[in-house]
Image (tube, rainbow, N blue to C red; front, side, top):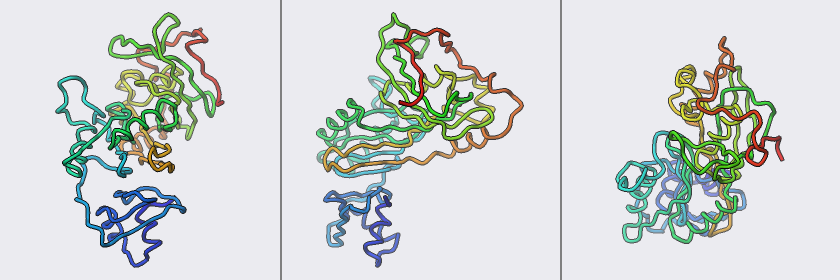
Length: 323
């Protein structure tokens, strides 16, 4: 895989890096028959690149949110922490959200027929990759991929505590109802939805670890609830995780959860799409602080408000090694 601008230069050595980015952003480059306007888009060696310098330039519009990938059917943005994915409720359509910023961008591109379809969402204080559809057909297809667990979502999570193994799997339904502003792993007598999360240790620290987390299902707050449930609360998560004082000890001002990767089969072209969001600076800063030795034992960082039963119902809570 290579960036589109670098792949174009490899096939057209007369182009400078700046010129390559320019012609891509003008809409003069097709990848496998589709216009792609994001220079950082990943393309594989077998991709067919077509540069037409005589093609009329498309309007050059800069979005107010970073793009990881874009074509005629969909786009993937790099949502910063602190920005809502969608409005918080009825009557809040004017809120500054990722959806609003994408709509502004698409409307300037296609003022006559703008369309932006929500496919999924991530929490306000979770950063990373988020996909939107640019056509109704693409939205239906992407939602179908999501329902069939064919849209791969990988997260990076900084946690307090010591993982008991190098990898694991949490199968613990999450209750439908909220209590005290939070959800939780369900008891056997509560209405709930299945929720399954895979995790793997990337790096261990004196007080915690960096985990790679992959969703098999996508319930609201799933990663945060599941990791807290097994005694690995996410750094900075004061709802499901730890006290604010402990979070401040490593300089975190939000939960250290980052939607790092989105990968799926394109609903129109059939090619494999993979978007990678780099770790933001606040996340890497928290990593450096967590690596530092501390005299405070990790056991003092306890989940806030979550007290898993020592004998959970097998139907509602299973944690095991990788399948």
